Length: 66
Image 1 (tube, rainbow, N blue to C red):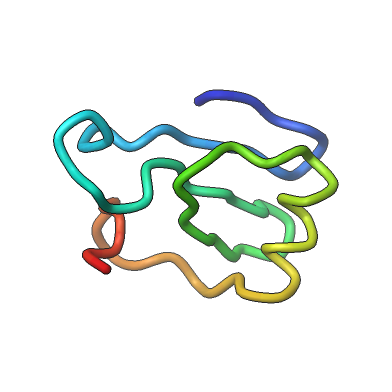
Image 2 (cartoon, rainbow, N blue to C red):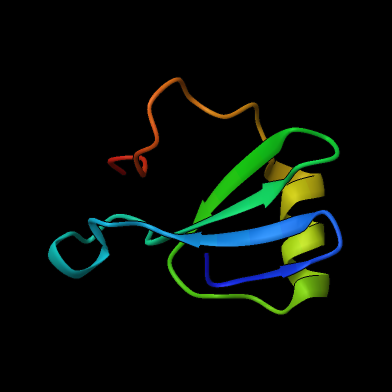
């Protein structure tokens, strides 16, 4: 875990150093949504991104391939 603010958290991907895929997973534990990003945003921006783009987490914990 990189950081957390209330119910929001940022997790680092174990594949970050070897992949061009997004490296950090933003998580909203209260709403149960996640969103992958390449750079760590501020807590306010993380909340905005989760509000705009957050989706239910995948079965496996892995960054998207795009």
